[in-house]
Length: 89
Image (cartoon, rainbow, N blue to C red; front, side, top):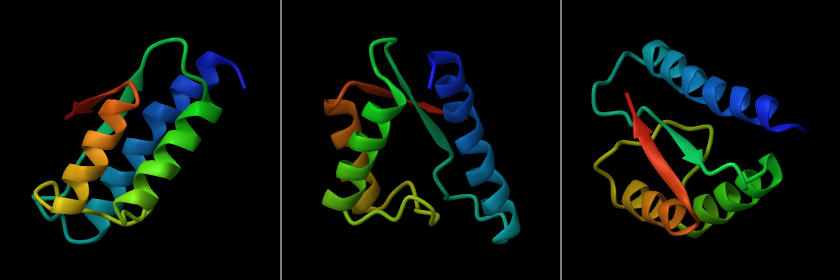
């Protein structure tokens, strides 16, 4: 998969999270974010890194998670250590 497709995927995922949050009652403490990496990262790298960090910190990638939970803090730190920047909106 090329970089443009990967970036489009990285933009689409947060939209799905936001729509899911709206459907779940619009809780204001849900994390709304996306991960941005340098151009050297591929989709395969992202999936590997995201999978590792999710599993290590017991975060279900498809489930909403509160931004102030310990699981999210550990997951966030893990992704940052792997070269991603957390962009919030």
